[in-house]
Image (cartoon, rainbow, N blue to C red; front, side):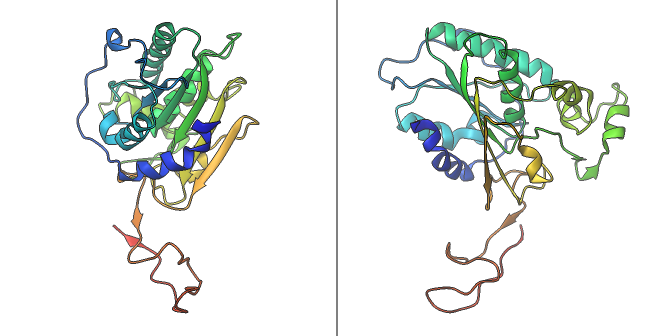
Length: 269
């Protein structure tokens, strides 16, 4: 499958992305028209950005790479501060609208961070369909089991469940992403994937938001895991950068070309 075979390229391209600070208005469904005749016949691709991020800032390089490859891409903005359940409802309707505009086509969804969690939740909404409208979900650094920190403060699952709803901070979206939250407890209380969907999940061991980074993965027969040894973005999912270090250098090794010891592996940015 060409789309899945190129996932390494897509993830590599995303390294130039960033995180935006402002919310964008939700994209109206009236704009979701049929794919142009000039695009390839492969399934349409729906992009779901993360928290406080527009598609351009979060997944812009991925969108550009897909369009350059001739793919039909739908880029939807949404209010990422609202409860995740509201966002899931929005994107579930978007999937239905895209499929109506492209009869007979299944859809491929790429989500980053919070968008990756939403993408999986949306796929579960159609789990009972005879023919699932989504063929593939690519989840990039998704908090599939929740996060344990907010603004650098550790929040235990018990504390997450006890947070009074009237508190202005964290936002409803962040509350829902906390490990042990009512939303995640309900979402993950049962099958965590839809049988007819293929999931590709990628994360980096340097992630300081989704920790441990392995919590971005799910154990299921239809899940392919891609741990990444390097950063995935310029946002909170990248705590380190490498300095003057050729690709063939690795911690604790000697350069096979010059015989020199490795450079200092990394430092905080």
